[in-house]
Length: 225
View (cartoon, helix red, strand yellow):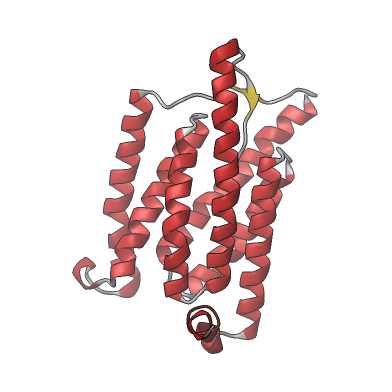
């Protein structure tokens, strides 16, 4: 019990009350967004945008710039996703997309995205902290790795590849202890819930992909994280 207090509660003693409330709100809305994604609801984009917007403010305040960059990307992705889906709704049509495994070309592009992101992000950290990349704290390099992993996952998701969910699971597993270490336990709990939701979504995609391969049915509505 003392361990949980030290890691999850004590760090909040140094935070303003309104920031704790904002984090709780952002985490709750983020969870709602993933649930909407699982249910294929358009509210996934609305909730996702609001959650990311709050987190951009919080993460900037906490100087967690790698996470902030990622949430800025989520902001843009949710805006584009909402208008793309809304356009289809206006036309009274359905967004039908095939589930597939990533091709060799897509894997190579995702690898390039990963390498570029993991290489550039530490320099951004160093610039923000007015230091050199050699003097950055260890978690900054972990942040860079996770940001690169999530960018690659987003690329796979755009290309409708099931590979995206493996990367999301990898990122969520690492994010949980990392956010505890950073003193944002509420967000760590959010990612624990994300991990479970993403796992079940992956299982659903695996079953659907197998059914497509066995029955030659190759269309499914895209799930967005």
